[in-house]
Image 1 (cartoon, rainbow, N blue to C red):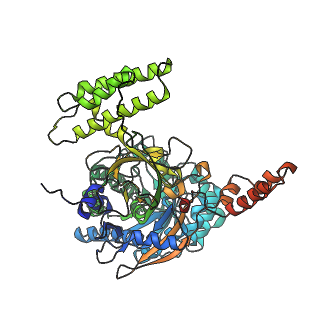
Image 2 (cartoon, rainbow, N blue to C red; image 1 turned 60 degrees about the horizontal axis):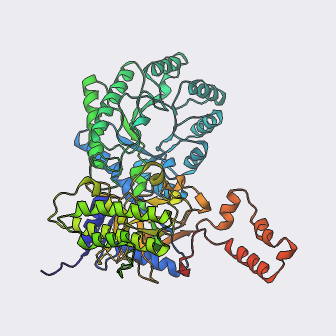
Image 3 (cartoon, rainbow, N blue to C red; image 1 turned 45 degrees about the vertical axis):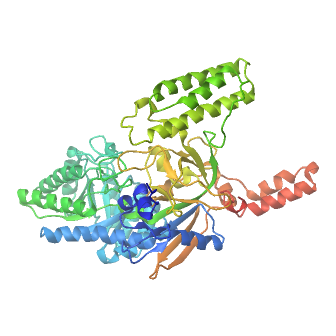
Length: 632
């Protein structure tokens, strides 16, 4: 039977591109990753070509590629989804979204979101004073909202209320009762009527990693009694008309659409009861939580979601209208604070593989001469006689023999060469066993052998810091899609896990997406000597940039902002250099000038070597913190 050639369709299937890529990514006939920034297959460019173009300009990996057109596409899709749902159900209210600046505060990202959202009156949400400064500086539509969430001090209130007095639509969300007197005090001093929202703690909760951030024990929001107290306080002050919004949030990355429906029923019922009580609410803010399908499985798994943007908008609109009809109150205008769904797709992190750790000694094979210790002969016998019929018994023998090997070595009965040969023989047994399990005729694999492939996986060393580029993978086991950006017409030959270049054992990636389960390794190509092998990490545009940390003083990578044109062409709009050694050293309070002079300060170091060291340190100050892959 002829062996089927590996095709780009096979690569698409292997890495699940169609499922998690959402139409933004694909593979071309050259076996290269391509990006479709508007989800139109006729508008695309080759990501490998972008990386090669940047290398010629002296920009090396690790590298962040930003595609502003994807940001614009996501803003458009979200707004159009709500508009479509409102037309379908003859919804009498309107939709206005706000982008939470905390999702990704980088100026170029916020600029593009604001630009794309202008025609939709799309606004911004700020959760701190610096974020409020950003929001107030943006060229928003005159009718766009700036919502102020999170804990606030008097200065925060003053900034927001002065902006309100200056004509901006700044809405302050009351998160706790102690904020209300402060807001009223500052508003009275400034002689301005505030625009207020009340955040309510729903009983309903989201699903996934962040479901505990909602409910009775939520960090933010008012309970029912506090909500009533706030209304009564404002009514007594003659400021009830200033309450225009009811706000709730049931957690980030909601995986199950049923949780959204449940929350909407409770929230809309609360809106209706308050409206009947005389609170002139105009907006129901459904908060954030609109998810991203990181693994493409379309399930309720924590790295997935079982709904689309259209389904989300439809359920929010329908449920709100249905409850309002039951309560016989006007429908509210709808707000949402979706950040992850807007920002995640636009960013791709590209890294270069700089080494391979062969954990199972695949380059070696042991042939015995007959004079070796008995334990080596037994391991060789196990290797040579392992078969489908006896694999369990033989594997147990190999485990026992390896334990005996280590015991004899520790007692001084075996040489270093003996130990090395024994370890190689053991891994030869494991590799042979793995091949047996790959036979399609073997329908059942005992549980004790199911982790064998993980043990046999190679470790590829990538020139990046996991803590800087994907801190959520380290911190909360968030999964991100990973795949090569080239060689996708070649069948991968190795199973591997990934290691970063930090001096930290946690700097590794050993969990990978899969449509049916979480994989312990990923299929990749063996790097060719002297040639770069590039991998890309996807859906990193939400939270990763700002949460990234300088562990080992590895800083932010260089960024390239790329616009895709017709005829598979592209334009690099902007290159933002990554952190230099000088920058990261200053960030931890070192004076780089002193560090350069330090090694040569003593008299005995006034030598040619000392001066050469000083020259090298001076040169390195202005360079990136990562390894120089040109020295491979």
